[in-house]
Image (tube, one colour):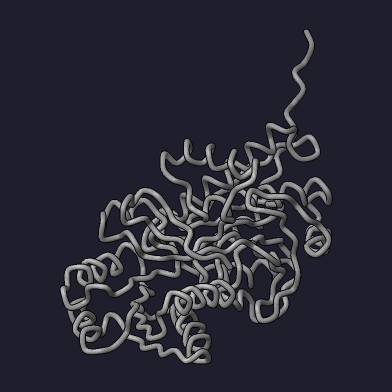
Length: 363
């Protein structure tokens, strides 16, 4: 009787994502769905050097210390590389530890400009730097006639950085930015401050679902603020939970979305597959997850699991993903290899049909 040949050992890929509170678990699920779909597509195409890919998933729960512990654990398990993460403060901690260990980390979604404090050869990122995306958002505001802006924000490095970017960009063009801080103010007090001021737009630099949902409901329910534009540059309105919790109140809130205006054939196929997997409209985060898996598979096919060879390949390799060709360069102020031209758009949920997205501006 002929003996069955053993299956080749898989390449292990460490995947990090916020899958429980206080992390943004919905974003984490979309990220993981994209990664899983990409690896299934790669395995269906013969795998990598005849070997399958296997995700080893760890929940970061938006906790940097928990994420660093996961990096050490995954390195001990022999993963070829790390992928994923959504929250910027967590991704910073992962990037620093991965680079110290000489372990490649392809960051999918975190946008904080300084992903590392120094140049990190082993770290690359698909999402655009926050300064690039949020300047695009500021340009949209100015083009729409909004130069007096209020931001309502929670205390975090990410929201502080976003405020600085908006303030620098808008004030240089004659705009005015006012900041209101939670939890020092209640949603009702935020409405009072807006009614007493002259801003025409309020930007929600807040976690989702809370306190963002409470602030939106308070503003939408205040007759003094009729006509005030609500905006959410961090992308909260794209997710199904936003529409479910806010209904019509959640429409017409522009947000940043890292998708091209039109998807090509690969992107359209990926969108359909992700929609079935998620049973919902796939967010840009799901596409980022897919492109992460696709790119890493290409690098493993070309260079094997040699960390030094993967790190040296960031500026040399180009891969066609679901949202365009991915090429990497050193972006000033980031410390990492950066996809040079990821797509950026400002979109919202159509007030006439909140399940439909409108593209308002492209960067």
